[in-house]
Image (tube, rainbow, N blue to C red; front, side, top):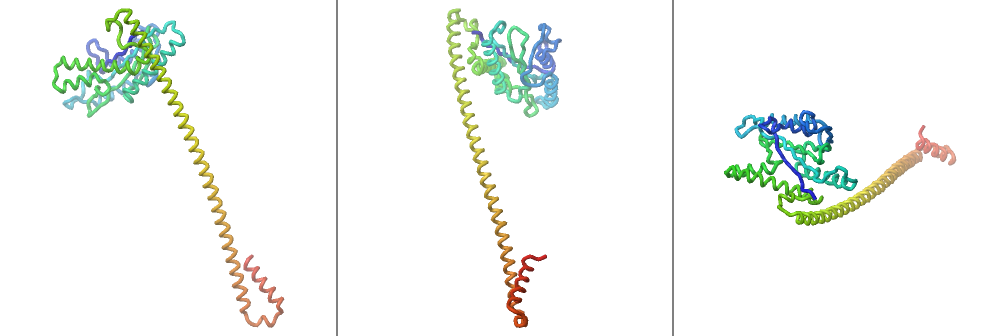
Length: 329
């Protein structure tokens, strides 16, 4: 069992002393030859974010163009704007089998998920390096602006802790202590979210001053706990999958019931429309009948013709008139 390796640094657009600038860190991350001379054959893959560093550097510059200091003046180029996180897989992969590489892929997925949970939309890129002795990931985060000022404390709790100590009037020594406490808290959070489930120790044996036997015992216990954690994760994933299937089945049932209801409504509308057409035809037939009766009554009321014609002639004339009314040409 190896100990986790997780490091966070912040960088400004302008380099300071021996510290790199944000642009240099981006060039090293994206394997620009000028800033990775130690790598004979650069090999990297972008998991999240742009395929080149240009958009990230432009985004950093855009934030700094709008940033102001406490006095309202334009922020200095030495103001940290880019946070770079590096997580290295503790176990060597050279000569590792399929199972070991599967564990590494699971670790990678945990790191990516954890960083996304921590930083959300502020994380602009996640890049994996495949060309060094230890497989590792780089996470790049741009600090947001709050009230015109660069708010690095929102993405880096150690900076937030130091700012709180400064604002409460504590000494420089206590401010540094608060910063280190914030760093340890992030290491603890990374261990809980990523390393513990993979059987990696929080710190190494030398840091804990353990004998070899104690370290082996601690390693065995950690691996046992990690296996149990992975088993619980697998059970939770299975339960989530069952819940998803149940929700899908319920949604499918609801969809079918809705379609059946729509079909029944459509048929009812068709029956209602047919009934309306039948009623209109009936009303038209009744109107024609009433007109025929009225015409017959008018003819019956005409004088003089009854006595001058036979009953058969009178009946024929009435029928002809009714036909003319019912079936006009």
